[in-house]
Amino acid sequence: MSLALTGLGVAAPERVVTNADLEAVLDTSDEWIRSRSGIRERRWAGPHESTASFAVEAVANALKAAGRTPDEVGFLVLATCTPDQLLPHTAAAAADALGMRCGSFDLHAACAGFVTALVTGAGLLPTSPGPVVVVGVERLTQILDHEDRTTAVLFADGAGAAVLEAGDGALLGWDAGTDGSLRPFLEIPPGGQHIHMDGGEVFRRAVRIVVDSAGAACARAGIAAADVDVFVPHQANTRIIEAAASRLGIPAERTVVNLDRWGNTSAASIAIALAEAEAAGRLHAGDRVLLSGFGAGMTWASALLRWA
Ligand code: UT7
Image 1 (cartoon, helix red, strand yellow):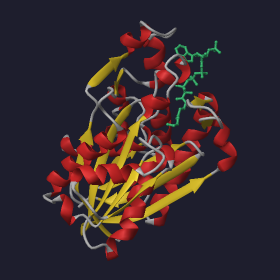
Image 2 (cartoon, rainbow, N blue to C red):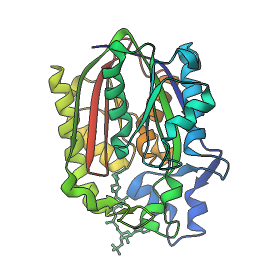
Image 3 (cartoon, rainbow, N blue to C red):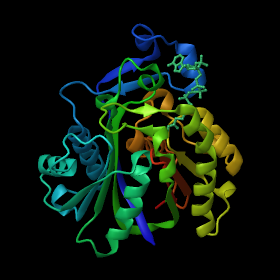
């Protein structure tokens, strides 16, 4: 289907936290974090920054890039697993600050959130009264146990948004799935307040999930994964990314990696990486751009775009 991402935008928390900063407060090391995950630094929200404030900034930047105004937007989909409040949805606060009164909802599909929002938004677009805006946004530091080294060094905050319009590009194929029997491996346990992750169990499944899901999205478009021009995977671990890209036949120079500077921002990670790839001039008209996210649930979603 016809789909152009006419504007991309990012919001970055002000505070940069390096591995050395974490070494000072946790039983961990820069060497362990870099070699096991690929992360060198991440951005953490300050007290004045919220999920809604990151969404507002990213959406405003995306609308500006698209040459659109908030009142033109036909629908807003906000993907997050860290809403500011349980009620109302965070999109209501973001839309209010932006001066938008269109329909909106929050979408919770963990680290597959942005791709799920993109595919959902593309489905709304043909009958939408205006452009559809999708934003992946997290303030994961509010659900981190900052004394738990197995998660505190990995997760981070930020947002990425995209304006969806009909145009020269296309959504060529997509794939999504959930295996709920795996949900104990990455969860806030019932009654708990903090993320608990069995990283090894997630790791063991992640590569196969990305390979199968990204491969299915490509197959539905009749394209070999090896012919993808730009691969933007969820930014959880460089070893997962490298292994999945290698099995898909996509070389490193066509794979976007930015988790060394951002850490794991869950629903925001692919949106931020896509925006950075565009800003770096890595996306060209006609390029086949493959997005693939996976995470808690376990849930996954992949989309193959022809770039406008
Ligand atoms: O975005 C949602 C999806 N999430 C993911 O994709 C995460 C997937 N998993 C991973 O990325 C990796 O499993 C981790 C980066 C979380 C961990 O890497 P690993 O190579 O699987 O390490 P491990 O869990 O096997 O832990 C190895 C050791 C353990 O010590 P013992 O039991 O071998 O003595 C851990 O206690 O490393 C220890 N460890 C740490 N050491 C220093 C765990 N966290 C840390 C730490 N610093 N921060």
